[in-house]
Length: 322
Image 1 (cartoon, rainbow, N blue to C red):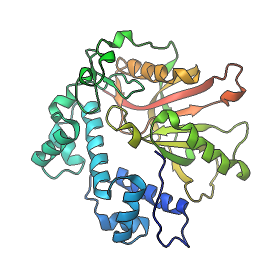
Image 2: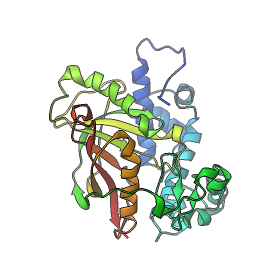
Image 3: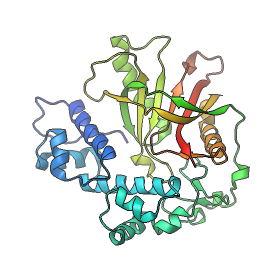
Image 4: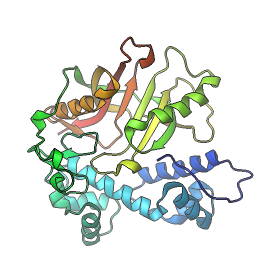
């Protein structure tokens, strides 16, 4: 669901795009400070609104109150760390993510995921389907809210890891540099990110930012096994080699420098699910585990110019040793 605003406030000096840009700035601050107390006044200050107006604007634009949003993002980070940081205790993860005590954390976690943190951790990160299904280390499908998938959709009951179709491709661990980017964010299913690129290209073309050497980069900020599809945050980006003045919904960003599992693919639009499944299957046997940073795709061609309309791309998953 694209961020929208349905409020008739005094916006003579601020366009709708400027409102959205301010709210995204707050979201980025929240991502970077989940280990701290994040109060309404601080968020409002970052957005340059009064607390009263900020609360109304944020809620109308995102469908969640600021406090509800912070709580959800914090809980989803805990979920990711429980799966990837297996050497850390549940208590230390909870405290590192801003929870003040383990008892309140335990109640909140079970309310959010319908299982205890210990039960949640027992399921491996596994392989994902386009429906956001997580497969356990035994090949059993588990939903993002911890229920056996049999309770949700019987057609997936017999699915096993070995039955998933994987791809034969080159995957390696590489040190990747930070990429300087301009971005347009879209919230919702990641297979709808093409709409975000339409907006980004419309802005970039008249500014001379599109040429034969332009690289598009899709960044995915949420785990489909943990975050509801309609709330997933996806950035459509262009890599740039110079500083670019941005405005409205277009903003500056960059990827994180570090080690990544990098897979090379030449695929049609229908093969993205297989490609990502292949990456996570390889990762499960590589001696590496996901690192707490956003994975991304780098596109090396315009698929419309390919004779078979295929995408030539790299899938990059941030990793660290087990």
